[in-house]
Image 1 (cartoon, rainbow, N blue to C red):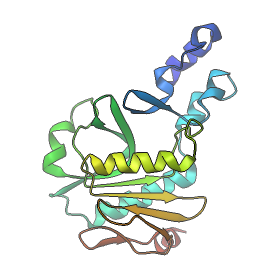
Image 2: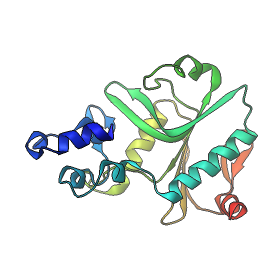
Image 3: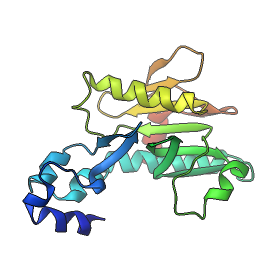
Image 4: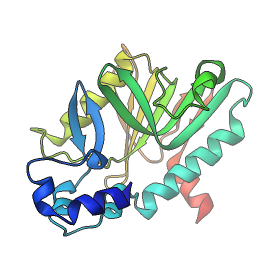
Length: 204
């Protein structure tokens, strides 16, 4: 993927007025959401890997959470997928998910297909975002829209982890959305809770 973009960027006239599809992070109702700083890639100021890759902190948190979830969830009933798994939630619309928990029987038919997954997970956990938020009037608009889209599509809980502020946002359908601190016992599902403060300190 990175090689393809580099070839296109080698001739700036070819990308003038058009953004290569490899720089599209997500799609909502046919409208692309690009990777953060995608324009710097187009100008040759950054390599494609710089905008697509996760920070060390983001990758570490995802690893900690996935490891914990896999140790406590019923493996016969649930499947944990991660690493920006693509979820097609509506026509011409898809989101990348950092961590998602599916009912195993529902997602099983799609695990060996090289396609976006079209069935809703039970829970989605997001750690920051790689999306370029400059097209939104307020950066929070992106988080609100993505969260509501996921809930409307059948996701039962969306959890956002914001590393800079060390805050957690918990959203469920027909319930008040909560903003809590890292030491909060975050309810994931079925009596499973995550305390980010404890989880990270145990690994230090």
